[in-house]
Image (cartoon, rainbow, N blue to C red; front, side):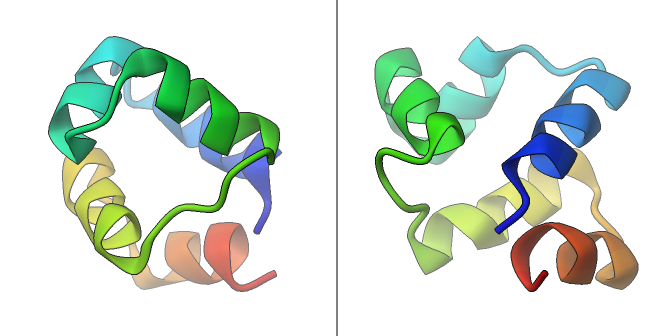
Length: 66
């Protein structure tokens, strides 16, 4: 997973980390741990990120499959 690309998409879409955490049903600390690589995103969380950030198939490949 390319965490830098995910962070860039979050910034580009002008969504706060609090909004992302709320959408995923996790704490902001939990999100920070996932973005730093200390914890992995669950499949359901990735699906929710795709929806919240309006990611394209190319985005998904670049962020989650690289």
